[in-house]
Amino acid sequence: MSLSTATFQPQVRDALAAYLIAVADDELIIGHRHSEWTGFAPDIESDVALSSIAQEEIGHARLFYERACDLTGGDADHVAFGRASAEFRNAVLTERPNGDWGYSMVRLFLYDRADHVRLDVLASGALRPLADLASTVRREEKYHLMFGEQWLRRLASATEASRGRMQQALDRAWPEALGMFDPVPGQEELDADIVPVPLAEQLLQWRLGVIGVLESVGLRLPAGKAEWTRGRIGRHSDDLGTLLDEMTSVWRSDPLAKW
Amino acid sequence: MPTTRTSEDRIWEALATVKDPELPLTVMDLGLIDEVQVTGGRVHVRMTPTYSACPAIDVMRQDIRTKLLNLPGVEEVQVELSFAEPWTMARMTERGRARLLEHGLSVPSRQSAEAVTCPFCGSTNTALENPFGPTLCRAIYYCRDCHNPIERFKPPLE
Image (cartoon, rainbow over all chains, first blue to last red; front, side, top):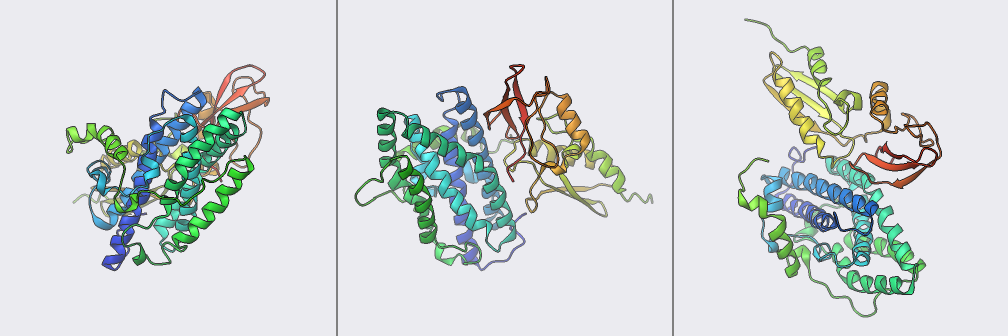
């Protein structure tokens, strides 16, 4: 399932590697945030669920890093743990601290829906090893979609207080969720047969899907023009730096160690 | 000159001793191995994991490498992960199912979805407690008759 045997024009290869790293960065960073709920989630079932979802996101990140390394050389662990904040391409949405359970669930719902659209597109692409991987990941992450939507519905329709918290969480998460559909540098070089649906259209598909659910539980999209920090071009909040300091501390203590 | 062309039989026998570190099963019981190709001293194994993010994959890959490299005539072993075909329950052998049952897990049938049976009392009066469990391939149910929590083997969704 390696991509190393496929031949690409250099600019296509670099754009594809950048794209795969953005996908992997999203998965790694949100996976790390989910893992911070281990031991602290509101009930034991959610604790196990988020630990499991975290494990899966991080495992998927690794597979996408490996595919990027097929193209550019290098080692997945080094890419994951050896870069500075500005070299990460994840959407800023994924790096924000967990905040309360409501924000975490709104973010998980928005993120996994966006990831699902992206995986759908990759799975329909012509690059076989990548399409196969995407359809496997999509299948496995269906459980994440169900988990996110159940919590969103439950909290948004429980009490006045819980609905208010969910609306606040949505107001915060929404603009940064749009950043999931920003292009990576060089994205225009990516052949339409590898990523067969343009980002603008992916965004529309995602919006339609999530708005349907949000409206059905009485949540409103925030008014006004959305502004967000462009994680896909390496602009991040300080939250990512803090996260990386912690996440990479063991790796940095001996980068050449074999685990 | 000894003519030690590795026999495929010995390779399959060795594979049948490689265990999943999270389950009382071998890679053969699970039906993970798609193909073995032998070219001179080089062995190429293609393997479809149950879950792509399963942390046991690395342990099994390393174990396959070590065990096959111990065979006479084998000089190089490559274990490739494949996602071309999804892993489904149909790949698990009957022996594999029996071992999981013996281990105290509830196990879906190899063919189709059906009621979740309690491995302790046999009741189907069971309820899903959590689709997520202690490993990616397990879910938690509860038996309303004997009041035991149940771990059920969870194949990836179709």
